[in-house]
Image (cartoon, rainbow, N blue to C red):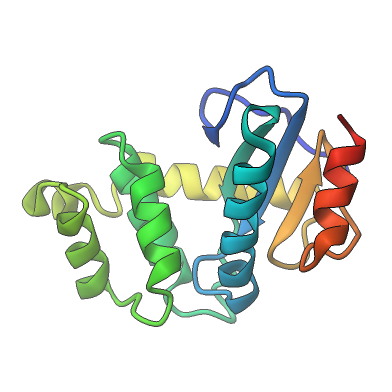
Length: 171
């Protein structure tokens, strides 16, 4: 499995020159991605500026009916610089991802509701989700979450300390 390089179109947290780049392909409705969300937050806290985290959308629409719209909602928020706020609120409210809830979340993070509704599903937002999925397909992603560390697929156990230990060994 190989990974496309991180570009300016990716949503990234942390320094671009960090010694570790962690890319996650995730699905907002996937319960395992919901678990991974909190684990990644802890990794970010532990590793600080040594970690750059990138999230790419990989909605499994055949399994999760709201996954595509949740990804589009995050990208719509991203048009106004609020991708991460929307990313977080969606993962923190995974059980309520219908369109009305997504609009409510947008308003709660300070987005203009009317503008959000107008931009929701616009070409740039759909194109970004599709580009992320295509990137995941190219990297042979077959489940979510899928993690890549410095471009290489991480096949270990991300649910326990093995993940942190693996990352710390790279420093």
